Every structure is written in structure tokens, then in C-alpha cells.
Length: 385
Image 1: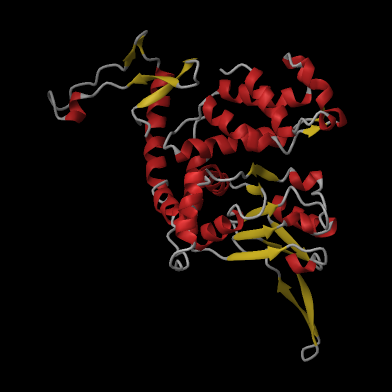
Image 2: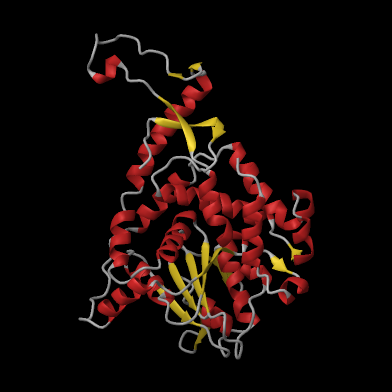
């Protein structure tokens, strides 16, 4: 847990990306030592007195650290409740929590049987929130998602019947099995947080999250997601097989006595309050420049000293990638009870934010180089502040 009495030094980071810190000396007036009313000594570090601007930032980060502790109190009970049903898959569980805190939609990609749907249903069950599941199929219609107008012969009037998108947590299961017209019905909801039915527009709940799953190995009866829709997902997580020890625990849990349904442990208001605090987490200018370096390297690899990657990329990440990367890095820091972002936060989330926004060229596909591999090469070769 980060010490709220320390503040990252803007002037230096070590090689691993951990920030150095300035200490705030104790005040006799507040510690109970010395005479009441004795002026506190000037804050100092190894270079002498701390400038007033840094002093103010120290105070702000101290207050912010306390706010992170208060608003993040629900995270441990929520994770403990999830762990009763989901064994292992630590990265997937954390990314769902990050999407919840950063107010971004999440795409889970993996072969069947890796607990993708189970995790989403468990998270929804642990929240005092409305949950809906949509099983995407080739014959699904847009009205099956957003709703439709129903005519009543008795009143001779049309009434609006809202669809499953009017919920807090929406599970779009096997999203790539529905045709493009259905997938595009999600665009307005995911980006604008509203749904239009007939000539009326209805706002969606403030807590609104689309968690989608898709199978990467099956091609028959599937429809690739439009690039515009893929870009709406903050994170794309590639779910892998669990470790052998974790799978043994899965056998014990899933073949034993039936577990009761998950009980709600978190209120939506708690999540919204945590989001407001997460948005205040400090991001240094050097971190923002690092984010831009990563995003720009996907568009113009040659200017970043990565000429060998230029033939492998058709299109790079959009500006939305940088926005989402900063937001996700803040949520990552929040989960670690830190009031500031480090380069390690950015590096941890960059693959999930960028992999579906980098479009490989035909040459890359011929060589078997995926978007994830390209992003990994960029992370290895871009200097860390």
C-alpha cells in the first residue's frame, strides 16, 4: 500500500519505473511533541527545502491517497466474493475491475470453457445493479437489443418496450455471432450512452458497462466486428488456459457441492464514487508523453526508430487509445491504493488497450505477426521515463 505522506518526484524515476519520493517531516504541533503552536519545519528533501509548488502537490496527494483508501474499501470484499466462484484468471478478474472503475467497455476473447461468462455473471451478481445477458445469434435483430414500439389495439397508441440494453451490466455473449446491423446497434449505446427507439431517445443508466465475449478459433457462423465498434472497447483481453494448480482447484470447486448464487456486496453509488476519485489520480506530464510515444509508434514506427515495424502495420491506434490508456492506468493505480500513475501502470495496460487498435498488414499476417506481438515489440523498444 502506498504511503500517503510521500509524493512522486517529477525529476527522476529509476530503471524499473518506480518513483522516488520526498518525505514530509513530522510537525511537533500535530504529533503531540513540543509546544502547541510551534511552527512546523519546512519540508525538505536531499536537495534542500521543498518548493511551495511541490509542497502543495504533496498536500494534494496526501488528501487524494486518503480518498483512494476510503472509496476503494469495497474492492477487497468484491474481489473476495468473485473468488468464491472464479478460480485463477487473475489478469481477467483485474481487467474487469479496471473496466468497472475506468468506465470502459471490455471484450474478452478466448476459447470456450475459460470462465469468461461465469466471471461477468458473478461480477454482476455481486453488485446491487441490474444485469442482462444477450446471447448473440445470426438471427438476432437490432430491436432485440434496444427495444421496440408496441401497438396497443385497446388504446390505439404505441408504447415503448425497452430492450436488454437498459441495464447496468450487459453481457454480450459471443458477440461475433450476430450480423453487422445488430453489432452496430451497440455503437450508440456504448459511445453515447443512449438508445433511440422510433423518434424517442432514452438515456442509459450512469453505471453502464458492456462486457462482451467472443471465440477466436471458430469462423463458421461468425461475423468480424466492425473496426468502429472494436474501437469502442477500452480493453481487449486475451484469455488463456489456467495453470495446472488452478485447474485442480477448479475441479474441486465445480465438482463439489453446488454453490449458492452470489450475494450483492457493492452498491452502484460506491462504484460511481470510486470512479470520481480514480479520475483525480495524478498523471505526470512525463507519463502522458510516454503514452503518446507508444500511440504514435503504432502510427509512424519509423519516426520512433522502429523502421522494421513499418511494413507490418496498416493502421495505428486512434487518439481514443491514449485517452483510454491514461484512464485504465489510473484505475490500475487505484487498485494498488496509489494516488499517482507510474510507467509500470501504463506498461501493464498498454497491450490490452492497443492490441485491437493496431491493424496488421498482409505482410504481418503472412509472417504470423499479430497486433499483440507488434505492441509488445513497441513496449520493449520505447524508452520508459
